[in-house]
Length: 233
Image (tube, rainbow, N blue to C red):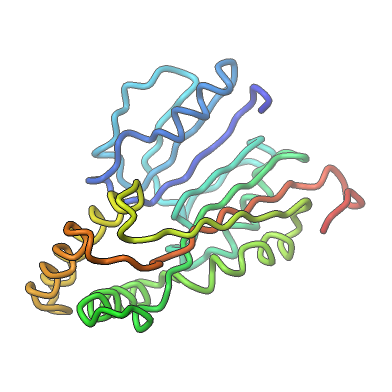
């Protein structure tokens, strides 16, 4: 990575974050450059980082920067929640310097109806309705990421999928457990599921009695061409 500016975008719910570890890692890679970490809610971030890391609380949907500002733009679990996600890819292309990279990470969730457990089907079925109501795309968007990047004009587009298994007692279980606890409270509060369904799903996960493929995390990236004839594919 060149010692030049990079930006990382996040739209995670703050209560479960641990202080922007990716932004800190990027800053360590370019100590003579600058990393701008953008989040829509920075209340729970540890902002004790030293330069070259800068924190910015802003709505990703309304961000704008001068053309050619960044060498790298990274976004984790953000674009899938943005109604203007295709427009944001075009903006990112403009914000990058020629030869700069955009790296996106978004989830492709398995349909709730595919679960073998009725409570899991009901829980994630309610989540699917909530996500759709707020304009999020947790299925088709991630699957189409390589095509979206190529269509926007990026070159050297590639992708790496990572399957996530509930019940493997790993990092994904910890993340899923935190999300199910938090999102379940949201569903119960709004009357989308009864409290006992939420409790049983949590018990299944904590008791290692739930083993199933829940999502595939799609990592996709592309490079801004150096010129109009620069190997776009």
